Each structure stands twice: as structure tokens, then as C-alpha cells.
Image 1 (tube, each protein chain N blue to C red):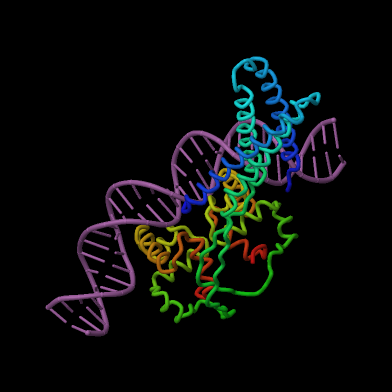
Image 2 (cartoon, rainbow over the protein chains, first blue to last red; image 1 turned 60 degrees about the vertical axis):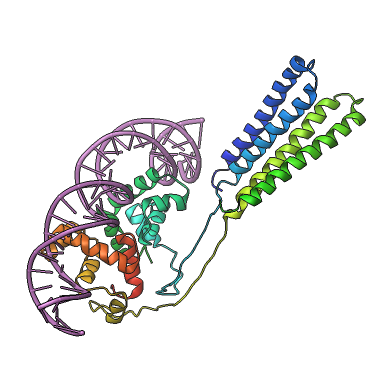
Length: 157
Length: 157
DNA sequence: ATGAAAATCACCCGAAAGTATGAGCCCAAA
DNA sequence: TTTGGGCTCATACTTTCGGGTGATTTTCAT
């Protein structure tokens, strides 16, 4: 991904929690060791805690899960063209960033801001910011105008 | 979700494994209890095992979310046909009226509903009605989708 | 390492878009 | 003449867009 650090953070956090919990439990050991069956309770607690920890870890690490449920019928294809390549020069000329172009591209496919946000794994507000900046750079007022201009400029399929 | 049973199965399985592992560990307890620091190792093992268990559980429970079903049908290839003339057949097929097509065409140029209304000398509400009907006929939810579909269908330049 | 650009997110608010429903007018076909 | 479709318009309501502002975090090049 583009943020190896956040993963490291998770690992570090995991290690820290592990150490912390072990310490806590070690401490608890001296307090409840006198209770009958304390050992079993102890083990159970650890099992529970670490099971939860595992679940949490898994969820965190597999977050960018692609839940693609596509159910559609008629598909219309205009051209086999693999026109995913934007016109670099034009993008530079207008100062349009990669992310902004991605947003524009998804806009041109008719997605709402919310849908674009989900597609790109960012928040709705972020998409709004990107689109605002994009509109300013393209000197347009609406997404439909942006799409129209984008096509004319050759930065959209 | 739609399969509460498989979840119950998993829960039961989880409980069973938990019990089993506890038994195993209890048994191991008698074997290695003599070793120094056996307790810490013991705890560590449990932590590790249950962390893995948690991860496994989480993965199992969240896995059946990615079912990709792609169904493609009829493929329409639009002709670079010139112009202003809409594809009559397609319009008929979708039951799109002349007025609705005009609205769609102006939409695709990036005009707002208000601007379209002024251009066609009708009220804003009329344009809204037209566009709503149009969206229903095209089976879309937004003007951007309508534009996109219109182009694919060859009823837009 | 440090500073600029990019990317991220939040909150507010007004404008535009879209939905739902009902209604009147005109015209052509049944 | 009745009926249906297209066109017009309205009111009321919800949702989405877009502008403005400010902030933090990443990224990247110097």
C-alpha cells in the first residue's frame, strides 16, 4: 500500500498491547493466585483477550477489503480502447493532481461523491475537497461541466 | 446476514477448540510445570494461539463478503455517427420523448436545470419532471449517469 | 531535515438536484 | 367522445453538490 508506516504502527501497537496485557496479568497473578481455580479463570481471560486482539488485528489488517458485488445486465461498450491513460501534458498544464484526476474519472462514470469516496477508500469530505479543487482548476462550476471539459481536453475517455 | 447457521457452527466450533486447547494446555501444565519460567512460556503460548484463533475467526467471518458476479449481456457498439441526430431506434426502445432527449442533450453540455429551463423557455419544475422521467427510462439515478449512458447508447454526441 | 505540495478529514451552509404527487392542457388514435 | 401520452407546472420534501474555512498528516524533492 501507500502507507507502510501505519502497518508498522499496528505491529508496534500490537507488541505494546501484548506486553502491557502480560504485565497486567502478571500483576493480577499475585492478587488472585489464592483464589480457587484462579488459574483457569486466568487462562480463560487471556484466551478471551487474545482472541479479541486477534480479531481486531485481522479486521484492521484486512480493512481494504474489496467487497465487490456486481449485479448488472446490459453492458454497452463504446470502444475497446484502453484509454486509461490521461493526457499528462494537459494534466500538468492545469495542475491537476493524480487523485483529482481519479475523482474526475469516476465522476464521468456517473458515480456520486459518496460512491467515489467508497471506491477510493476515503471520506466524503475528501472527495468534496478534491472536486472543489478540480472545478477551480478546470474553471467550471459543476461536475457535468467538468466531465464535458475533461472529455474535450482529452483527459477522459 | 442470511446464514445464521454457519455462524452458530463457527461459534460452537470456537467453543470446542477453546475447550480442547484448554485441556491440552492443562495437560501440558503437568508436564512442564517443573521447568523454570514455564508459566511465562505457557502464557505466551496461549496468547499466541488465541491471537491466531482470533485472526482465523475474523477471516472466516468476514470472508464470504467478496462474491463477484459479473453478468454481461447485449453489447451495443455506438457509431461515431455525426451529430445532432439521435438514434431514433434507441430512443423508441427506451421510450424517450423528444423533449426528454433535448433535456438530456443540454445536460450533457454541463447546463444546470435552471439554465436548461431558460434555454427551453419552460419552468425549472418542468425540467425536473423531464429529467426524473428520463432517469427512470434510462434506469439511472443521476444526471451524470444519464449522460454516460446516453453516450454509450449513441443518443448523445 | 525541512519545507512545499498533495492528500486527508471536518464542519457549516446555501444551492442545486432529485423524488413524490397531483393537476391541467393539447392532440391523436381508438 | 373517450382515452392515453406528451408536455407543462406546482408544492413539498429529501438528498446531493459545491463553496468556504481550517486543520493534520503524507509525500517528496532539495
